[in-house]
Every structure is written in C-alpha cells, then in structure tokens.
Image 1 (tube, each protein chain N blue to C red):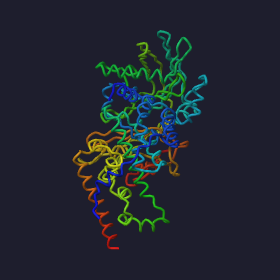
Image 2: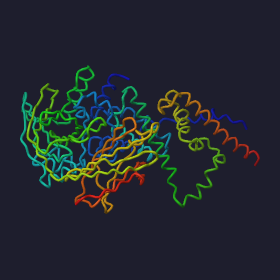
Image 3: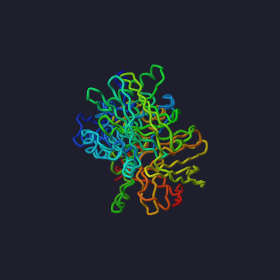
Image 4: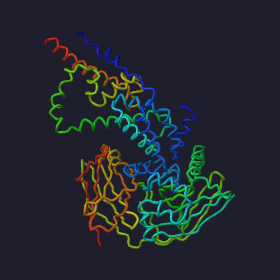
Length: 367
Length: 177
C-alpha cells in the first residue's frame, strides 16, 4: 500500500458553510450588542491590558479624548436603555456612574455646579463633578435650542471623525475635550461613559506613560477649565468652575519590596484608596532579551482584603519602555477600610486565573 | 482595501462600534468557516467568534495598518480557536483518564488522516488546516500566522512527514495482521 499524504490531504478540503447556524447568529448578535452596552465595559473591566501606545502622542495632550470608551458602568443593557429614554433628573453619578461614583454620590462626595456656554443654539453644560485626588469625573450635557438634543454618542463619533480627519490632513488634532487646572493643561487619559441620551460622564485620570508622572498632582482646591470642541459647528465651549477635593484623608500605601518571578522583578509603587477609587500602580522590570511587554500585557490583578473578598476592577492599562513596564489598575474600594490588602497578579487562561504567588504583595492598611 | 473599508476602520478606531460591526459583518461566514475547521464544534466556534469580536474591538487601537485589518482579525480568531483546543486538551476528567491513556498512542490504529491532523502540534496543525482544509495559499497562511512563507513550507513538510510516519506505521502493522 503506497501512501501519498499530500494527495490525501488535498482530498480533505472542507465545504464552505453558506449560512450561519442560528446559534452562531445569535451569539454574534449578542457580541455586537455587548459592544454598545455595558458588556463591552466588562471586557474592559476584566482585561485591563489596553495598551496605550506611543501613537497617542500624535494627538498631543488631549489624545485620550479620542479614545472614546462607550459604556463602562455596571448597569444592565436594559437599565441603560431605560435611562436613555428618561429625562435626566438628579445625579447621573448616582445611577449612571461606575460603582465608585455611585458610592461617592451616596456619601455626598459629589458637587453640583452650573457651568455652561452657548454658541449657535448649542449649549454645553457641566452639572456635577467628583474629584477625590485620583480622578476628576464630570457630567457633561449637550443641548440644542430646537429641543432635539441629539444623542451625545452620535455627536461624539462625528466630532472624533472630524478630529481624525484633521490629523490625517496634517493639522493638529485639538481633541474633543481639553481639561485645564489653574491655567495649566492636564496631561491626562480621558474616558467617556455615555450613559444618558445627551449626557456623558467624563473622567480624567493620570495618563499612563513612563515619561509622565502618573499622578494628577493637583492641589486640594483649584480652578478647572473644560474646553469642548464641537466640530459640527466649529465652536469651542469654555466652561470654568472651582473644584474642591472631596476626600481629605486618602490612604496611600507603598512598598519597597521587590518580588521575583522568571527573571522579572515587580515592585508595588503605590496604592491610593479614596471613598470612590482604589488605584494601584506597579512597575515590572525584565532583563534585556526578555519579552517584558508580552508579560506585562498579559498580567492582570486582583486585590483582596484580609477576609479574602475581592475588589471590583474598573479599568487598567500597561505601558512598556525598554526594560521597564508600568501597570495601573483601578478598583472600586472596599465598603469598609480593610486591615490589609493583598495584590494578586495573575494571567488569564480563558476564564481561569493563573495566580502568580511569587508576585503577591500584602500591604497593611493604617486605620 | 477600498476607501470605504479604510474609512470604517478609522471610524471604528475613533470609537464607533457601528463602524466596527460594519467591518465584521461581511466576514462573518469566513470567520465561522475558519473557526469550524479548527475547533469543529459549533459551541466552541461561537465562543471563539465572540471572544474574537470583543478582543478585536478592544484592541483596535493597536492595529497600525488598516490594510492588515482582515489578517489581524483572523490571527486573533486563530489564537482564540487554539486556546480553546488547548483548554480542551487540559480538561480531562478522572473518569476519562483511562480512555485517554489508551487512545492517545493509537493515532496509527485509527487510520483517520483527518483525526491525525488534529494530533499534530499547534502550529503545524493550524498550517495544515488553513492550507488543506480551508484551501488558503501558503502566502496567506504565513501572513495570518505571522510567519515567513519559508517557515510555513518547512512546517508543512515536517507535518506531512509526521503524518506519513503515523499512517505508514499503521499500514505496516495492518498488513502484518
């Protein structure tokens, strides 16, 4: 019997399926739906390895305003849909914000403001803010004089597209939203949760980049200026208001300990805990020739309290340069201040978490 | 790549999920057929497709060249499919250990070339599936797997030799019987 493997393999060509099975169809539709509702945020939430590459610098300081993140709250699609149809009453933070903002709203740590500007029948306003030292979140609303109040999502996409067109044409991209503190433009990462028809919660956090200092470094009180560029009418909207830090007793944990795993070293640079945010920063270094970027990108983090309860992850990112990588992860703080916290790095294998005990950090929390 | 597709990619990179969906829709069948060739079961195809869509959407900003969108997307899909196969091979319940122990070395006895392909190591298996089962040219397989065409040819040659050895061994034993 003479074998001709190549010929036999050629005979194994599969027939194309020309119509998707119903089950596949519905799973695809679900995946599409999840992109526009909060499921997409859960992916972001469970996979905090969105890499912020150097390309961001092309967009100058306001780069991240282009990185529109739609829907990163923790409410169901049904709820989100219902919210879109209801008139906007009360605090959007309270029912549309992430868990940290909801807590801040419940505890009265958010502040109402009345900053607005009108051009050509379009009014932008900021009605509420929360600043806890780690991030600034604001409710931004766009209204039109004809009362149509188009969905902010569509406006944002259109503005983002025009901004990209400008950059493609060699002009400087201004960004859709610029944030200034006491006349100094902030180098920040900006995300936008469009939670209501014509309103969004925009959050400014320290930019994740090695060349940048990864804290906001703002005083407890300053004057905030928000400039929104509306590309559809080519107008800038300038809104200003005084900001006061809501939480005075932030807890900052640091550790000098260096942990080793497979020739990678990790240091827990800082964990800052406020009522609304628990922000972790870790640095990882490797040796020349090691694939540090692949390792740091694959690393994710859990934070446990002393009772083994896990904090809910909100976002995260990592940036690698040469032999050092910096990772950040932002969590919802525990309801009560823990006695100690354990940072547990892991690598996700599908739905499994492969914890790396060699890189675990236990930090006591001063009461 | 036409201008319309390029502009959809730019819109998608700017955060438009609608533009992203517009890019994926025309590729659905190709994606499904590819996933089916690798993982076979529809449930696994659905998992692989869903993960691929979500991961691609999430990491679209890392795609530097819009012209490589399709290759990039299929690369994500292939990784997801292989991840599922890896998981599947690790999930062996105690009850089945005995069966597996007996069946693993029996590639030759089964004399099923199709099954034998799935016992090749991951990269070679993927190359054989994409080239023979999916009828893709080697150049395209190389692009999808981020390998040189030469490396793909070498792997394919080795894979054919391995399959030949398995099958020849079977034939030999069968003739002796």
